[in-house]
Image (cartoon, rainbow, N blue to C red):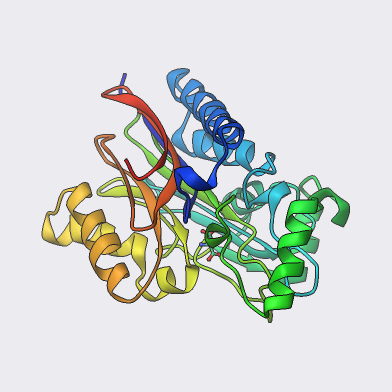
Length: 305
Ligand code: ASP
């Protein structure tokens, strides 16, 4: 039976010097558990869309990561979460932006895909509608001293801070191939610390932060969202495969290491091609990542080695 799953927990300035042995252990443990959960679904004959949603949900519930529970603070001291999902067989997709009280934004994205005629719902009306169908939490759920201090520092510096540049935490995502040959992708984030004006990054934008197409690949991105939006990263990679016949690895390298780099966009992505071959590519110093499949060895890694 052919199956594969890859996941990330954010990319950025993550080096050996910046993580203590204990932090490294915590991250690797979380990545491993999330991977195990997703792989068990696939091995049990489950669908790729379920595997990516459950994997991302697991990471959303762990405050090590900037998604769900661990979401960063906005300028106003609130939390605004974005997420998206896509199925490669049907090209159906669902996404949410600026949610503030839904416990698992990835489930909200799935709900949009499965139960509405839309692709992207945003803001307070979206939050209100989705709260009728999904578990909600109050503001305190997201509080941690680390996130609070991070926000206070960003306010003081008057900067909008990407989580990765702070060495810790990050957006989460997963891609999977199931035994039917169906690809799927999911991504979830709290965005950037101190973000203002209803800022939305690449995560909920299909084609930028997330994309899946059974003819090409499944992709989930993490990094400085504005650059990923301008480079339409995920769809660009799919196009290089579809129209130019590039391999997944070549397409990812071209977009992440060449195009994105040239405009100063920092970050990375995880991807699977239609045969379940993975590519875990980043132009930053590190990326929390893991992958396992029926035709390659399990990998759990953080640094650029
Ligand atoms: N891409 C996300 C955003 O710009 C941030 C991240 O990957 O951590 O909102």
